[in-house]
Image: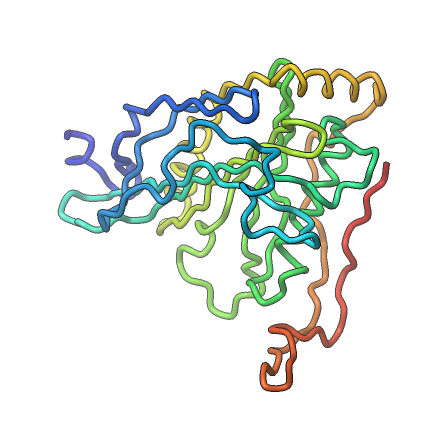
Length: 289
């Protein structure tokens, strides 16, 4: 109660931050343990997706919106909000983070490549960033991947990165535009699947305060992740190590300098798709075995 009473933009209050829930998920034999603050939404809505305790990542029906042409498909098993509150007399939240946990299937990974090969995993994630950027030009232009960092934790490789709006392409950015970004933490589950944790941030001004506390919440969650791979996944991991003993991932990397395509709205009355490309931009990054 005192933390709420003395909350401010510099030191916001996050309900339940010091009383996280222990969550255990079985991902086809791989055991994931998370410590997450409880869901909190100032509008009173319940969890967007309560934790699903057991997920068969090899069951096609858990990827309900996928098609044979999808480069990436995912199944969501946790989704919740965390609100940030300022002075006690301000009843509305200052901002919020939406946390999402998915298993992603990398359909575009060429045959013979593996997410357990660090170099292949890096290429898959850069391809995903491209998919979320120039390949979807209707959305705001982005800078990605930002603040890339690869960390080894025991036998587990984690890749952390962010995707930000390109503020130079926004005509009149808001005072808190720089505090609207997404953070990701990714680790392989087998040759063609990885776990992706997302932190979609909608911050406030002053942005330096918002970014500091949103990143602190993300780091608190990531520090307490425990993942034990299934026996079959460990076998694939060991096979990848033996096959590619010298494979490496970039410990850091700069954002890609992609050129976005020029486009216009499609005319549905003429049977056109939503987006018509007038001039191509940067082509998709290729996979290199």
